Length: 308
Image (tube, rainbow, N blue to C red; front, side, top):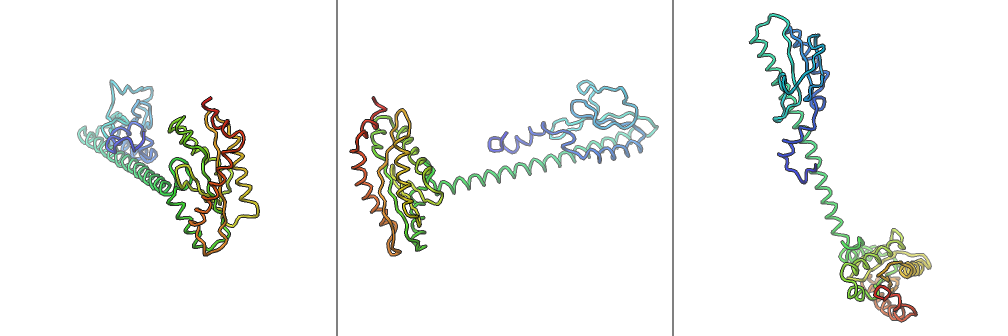
């Protein structure tokens, strides 16, 4: 039962049902105390759990005795208005009855107060830990939301632009700047609806991440457009990445969707240039590539396979 769905007061009231005597007490310490009490008062003592099962037996008076906690409950040990144990007493000596009762009642009060303090301390600690975990989870989600595009999990536009600025300031060159645009996203939206067109965007994002190296900076910079930054790429690395991405899209099997991308690639080679300017240049190259891709043989047939 999670803390996020149950109030603290209700939890404190109900969770005592999950506790046993051994959860609440150091039973060895309790046995020593009751042994001393039994010697002092000349009595035998039996301590049972809430169901009547024997936990501590001091003396021989309870041999063969099977407690019936419903009909003969003894003296109840109650924590938060819930019975956790039963205390049975057999008098052996001639100690004054009133004095004996007062000392036994004092022992019960001591046990109940000790159990209550232990119970509340443990539940408070668990409650605080759970609240701290919730806060940490919320901070983590908030931090992710500040960076990530909710639909795709890649960087959102604001954070992607922030990374561009950081790379610009670091004076790293060369940097490959890649613009990836989904071909005919509107076709998917018009024919299959928002859910499927969103799935197309997520599918392409997943394929980009699948083919990219961990150090690539990937962001969704518009509805159906992604930016990819590759600092200090090796010779041919970016071209291989683009080829793998196209092949992953073209071979993607789906009854409705036919992912296809147009890609523009440019390089920042001068520290005086900005990645923002280069991203615009990459967009221009992407549009040139889009014309080639959409007019390639078989493109229209694959695009329309889901409505045939």
